[in-house]
Structure formats: structure tokens, C-alpha cells
Image (cartoon, rainbow, N blue to C red):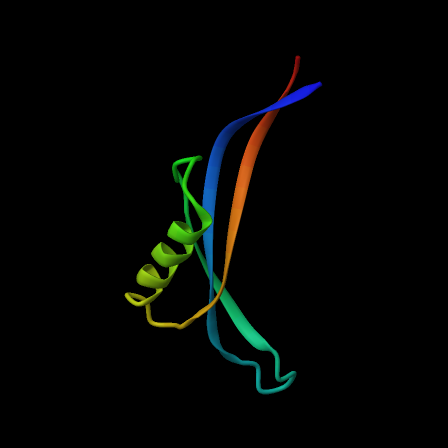
Length: 74
């Protein structure tokens, strides 16, 4: 049996910086926020990302959350 011990959480805002004129693909920039409480809920994180994006030059493209956990054998 294995238990998960949450260590850290990071929120990454992917920003739409425009379109590449040659390929037509979206140019994506990113901004990461670390030291997020490991018990933070997805809904709260998304709301925070939208509020932060409102302060930035580029619109929000997508939001990613990275959880780091330690696996402990019981």
C-alpha cells in the first residue's frame, strides 16, 4: 500500500501572445506562481488565474496546475 504526501503545488498561466504569421499557431507565454497551498481547490485556483490574468497584458489561454507528491510505502 502507498500513501501520497503532498509537497507543493504550482499554478501556471498560459497566455495568448498573438499568432505566428508564418504558421498561424498561437504564440504562448507563461507565468508561474509557486508556493500555493497544497489543499487549494481547482475552482479557487482557476478563479485566481483569471483575476491575475486581468492584470496582465495578454489574455489567458489556459491554466495548468502541477502537484508534487511524495509516495510513501505503508
